[in-house]
Image (tube, rainbow, N blue to C red; front, side, top):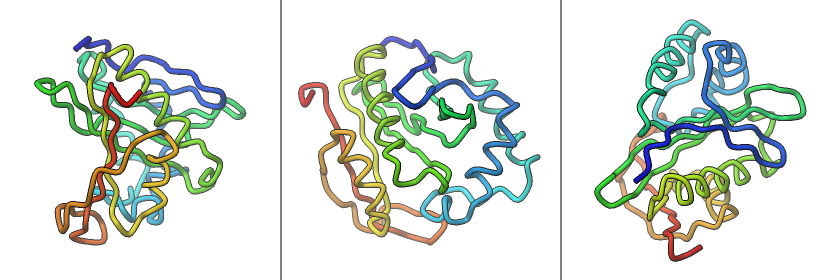
Length: 182
């Protein structure tokens, strides 16, 4: 596994890059404070921009670790930070990563998240050298599963009552791509 860390990735409409403390206002306003965005996530909406700044300070300090992968999604058309995509679990022994993501409601339905997920998957396979990239969603959030499908992941199965999020205990639906699928 190549520990290249969070490098900038450019897609047709996005720049995926490392977070900066200056992203706090956009992050807070665009997604971190929105209870609709965080409904199916494991962390509550931020109650102030100071909470967002504190989190970003922690994230920024971790970029020196080449095994840390956490991108802000910057929209090329306006330079706004509109979402986040990251490796939430890395298993070096089996060369596998689990991905998590969230994005501003104002940009839902524009195919931006599948674009970001596909680009991150390509990076993790081609640059980092992983063999498997997976993601899961609450069974009550099928739109997240469609993002995974559009990015080329295959449905693997449902783990009943295996997760917890802001709504409580939930079924986790897993999707993945392995190197030989590509």
